[in-house]
Length: 339
Image (cartoon, rainbow, N blue to C red; front, side, top):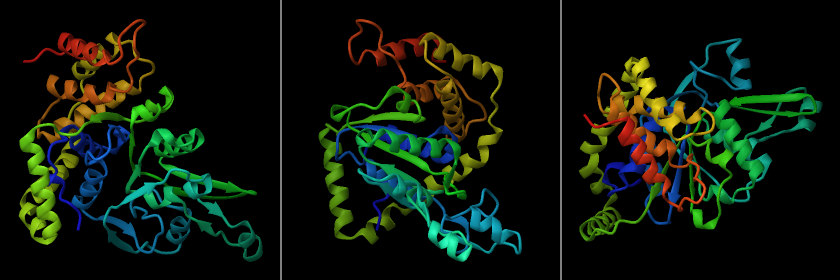
């Protein structure tokens, strides 16, 4: 039994950022900064359990979408007959520290190909993660070339392995969630920028809310089935709300007025590149869809800018550490006044 997503106490920024990535995977994943024991992995597993089953190609190792991008094997099967369909639950694939390149991307059996004239591919974690969650704890402690491979695959949505003139490809569209404790080491700015959103999590210090955590944990451990039944109405309501937001998303307009307000924020902060603008645009649109709005307003752009820019701001010369958030909020208040 998985602890219900809606039963998690607090951590609203974390939960909202995860939901927005489900509504629009193009946002680009989530980086979670903070201490251990703050429901990070619990929230990811709980959300995966909450979401509806995926339609997949039956017996496909990579959970290929029958109506979407296909792996090399499914492409060959599709040439001779219609692909049989199946349904699977989303799951969370964990990337361990010390993972090798072959374990991440997979390997081709060259000897088998030469002897039998057919490709044999041993799938890696990217194959397991296709259309699932890929959870990377302490991402800042991974080797840089592993992070590069991971983020490149996340951006391209495909993993291709080539050996001795033989190649194999499969879709690699996953929701990337990385966690890190900044006290244990930083990520290079180029890698930080590749995560769509970033949130900071801390333990709850309110006495009543900490009591709620203990009560719910004790109730879940004593009888997880009964606890799940108690939270089923909230779970079903949230799942339906996410489904409606996915359907509504393309209808949310991105007119010049919305784009101008987004650019007014990013230009005031002198950010490098244009990924921040794109992420704010996608996140604000997903927020409007989740809030069941017909259009994007200033509150959606403000609420999108905070997690989109938390890890992208540059500290000014002689500026105190941590002052970036105050500068960001001042820019948002100036350019996106409350109605």
